[in-house]
Length: 189
Ligand code: 5GP
Image (cartoon, rainbow, N blue to C red; front, side, top):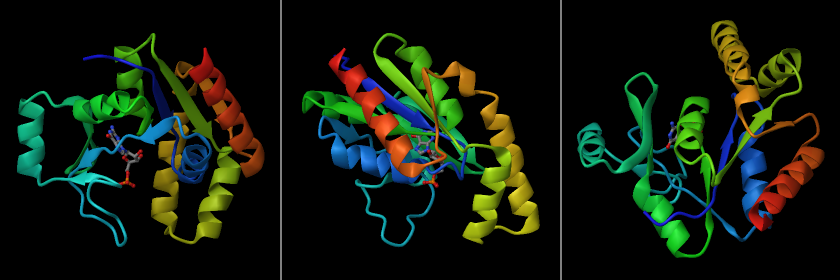
């Protein structure tokens, strides 16, 4: 496969990754979002081929057999997600750099495969207490799922030192500026 650069972004939930990724894509036309494959149901407003390539479990497993993925994982119980080799080829073929928005394990897997042509970025909430506050304010969690998310975030935080850059999202505009700066200098290098 002819290779260009890859930008990998990962974060524990509640760290504001989705907003930062949207802002980065809007301000950096050299990047293109890498559309993952997955087997979960589309949410309201999600478009097949734009947000995800939605597959049945059988079709996804067929792709695994065909060696179509750079990495794939069961991110949630019974739900598969994977980064398609064809997506990277398409984006590189367009002369752009793929931006991969992916969970921590998948991010490490891609980083390991492309150590010399990837930039991996870990977005972090300022503290577990702040993360707890944000999740409570968001109002989407029960006490049990709140604890589950906090525990998962605590675990995922232990991986932060393995990434090229850690951005602490305590202020959205400052974190966006830092993300843009880091990405642009990597693309220019
Ligand atoms: P959601 O179902 O909320 O869209 O995504 C759930 C999680 O799966 C997020 O952490 C997201 O970053 C991750 N994810 C999305 N695409 C991929 C992928 O291709 N591979 C892996 N390993 N994780 C992914």
